[in-house]
Image (tube, helix red, strand yellow):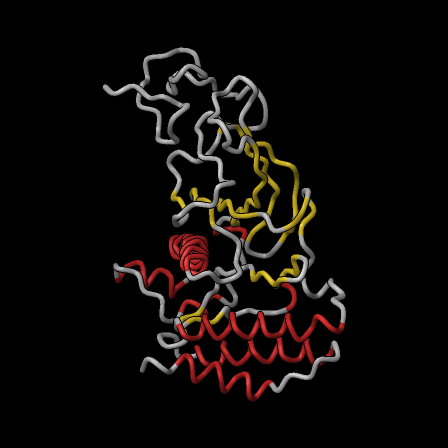
Length: 296
């Protein structure tokens, strides 16, 4: 068996013979870490796309600490999680030893609201007809499948959009019902939602152009956010970051796809107009539809 040098790589530990958790062995790690609430959940999770941002800590010697709730919602709660290397843990020179992430913890099937799932799920397919029927009938099994689809759909969407260079948080990993992603904020303080922010009037044209270009890029790929509003757009300094993507809509495969696209455009156009920067929502919708249908 090849031994593992923790100072030279972030690969999974392969030498399981040690009883010292910080000398290269992993099998003997105690259940409770020396600091924090749990050992790193990196191992065994589905990971985000590469190239991975340099701030992501992948060492299995890392521990994680829950710093509290950032946001509660109908489908999930979002916590602030600190991942760090304890003082005893080996670390590579120049590599980060601490980062903070947003942990989105999706509610179980019994605690979620499914009243609006049907419209968003149109166009999404599962392999087995039994699963399709269970989802359509909203059986307990079907609701569990839907819950899993929401988490996986958001993780996949973030990965694809991040790879395209769109302004979304980097998805670090997905482990069952918890997704760890980039925290948008400074010093543990989350960037405000657009609905809470008061951007200077002279900044509004630039912010609108950021939003318009992002929506056009999404439409070009055949997507719409599906629930876009000032509540799920963050203002990080002078840039917009779009969040909350579990309901992402395939505007071509979904029979109501164009309606979702138009609703997103109308909601955001009216917000900018109400703040003093007039936006022609009809023109925006027309541009988005043109992009979405350009590949037909």
